Amino acid sequence: MLVTLVDIPVMFVVSPRGPQGAGEAFDRLEARLPSLKGRKFYGTLVNGEYRACVALEAQDSPAAMGLDTWIIPGGVYARRKLPLAGQCLRVPVPARSACGGPRYGLSSAHVWSR
Image 1 (cartoon, rainbow, N blue to C red):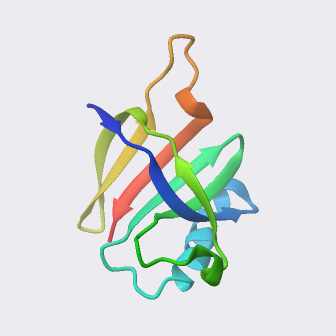
Image 2: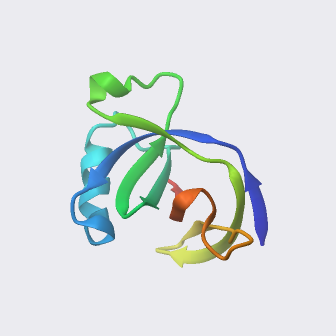
């Protein structure tokens, strides 16, 4: 199913091992948050750099938490649901551009909320 998403401001940490280090990157990201409840997390691969991201909320202070910020670009994404330990995992994958490549240089964006 194709969906249109708006820009998503996020805080993030980079995985030095690319997607293979995603778990460690998310552990580092989650350790800096006061709570995970209701947060939306994203994994992105941009030009070979894997980023573990969390959507910014009004009360967040990225600099105080030692986190960088970025905006996941809005656009048209394909979305599918996968089972994950009794939860649903929404995986938006960028729709292909007319030339066949991913739009916005985004290789993947994995989305889930806790």
